[in-house]
Image (cartoon, rainbow, N blue to C red; front, side):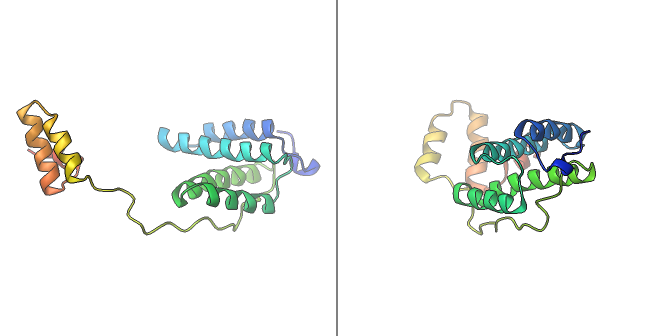
Length: 155
């Protein structure tokens, strides 16, 4: 690996290359890999749009602020986590300094994220069902509030 710390340059293509190496290095499930890849690509796009070839801690803080303005807290933290993990990887392999260290993410909202169905929506779904078993299943879901996985596992 070339030592990019010495010449203090981390181009977008180089970052993407190391990002893919990092993704291949991870031992996580497919969904996590997809999230990491998305977060790293988003950061690379940000750097490209801002014409940044040698990202600094201040650039990462500005990136966080950009995310906060454009995304919900969970997305901000997901994107930041992937970039943090990448730069930790780059630092361990002596490729680039960890510019993400001790940069705080975004506070998660206490607002309940999933909205309940309205009575009108419930009637629409229920009236659209033809099968008696489906009607029984949906009636249980609508009236008891059990989760889908609980219904699937029910005897």
